[in-house]
Image (cartoon, rainbow, N blue to C red; front, top):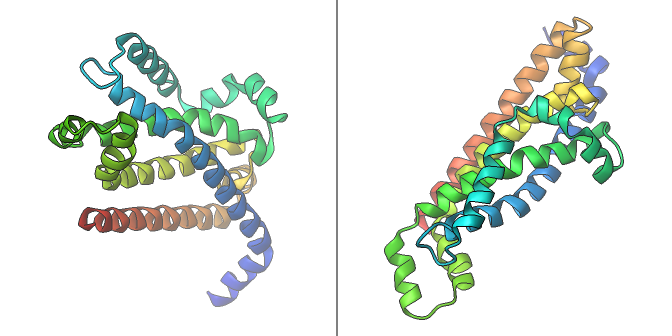
Length: 224
């Protein structure tokens, strides 16, 4: 068994390492931009609701509609549907750079919903107390709402990150690279079963590690 594992790593080690790095690149870059877009959208979804600080039913309905429309489209369809837009923004539709745009378009609305849910759970009485003291809304957002919702935000981002890892696997269909692409090209198309099994095991370990880390961090924030 040791010989077979050693032989497998000798043959596929460099390829697996490169694919793993590509997966981390896609997830890390896409998650960063998705949070930059999704967190403010989540805040707007909460504050523009009727009766909230920035009540604006029209803006709320528009944001709600756009987010629902994007989230209704499966990633594999979205990936091909926005190819012209991806080409315009990224200059290419293949490789790691070529899948960042569709990954962000897919993930940002999802994060916006998760942030909306997390912020909406903050005790309204706490927010009203700060409003009664004349604290500005923007200060309440950062120092009260987001602070109080940190455990839920962390858990939400953990879920989003795991979903993003799954989406990167489908990105292999447009030559996006990563572990999913490796499993598809070699494990499926070339019937290299050992590559498929190893890649699936690696993805399981990655997801399990992320979920454990997210849970522990959320627990620590609850105690803070």
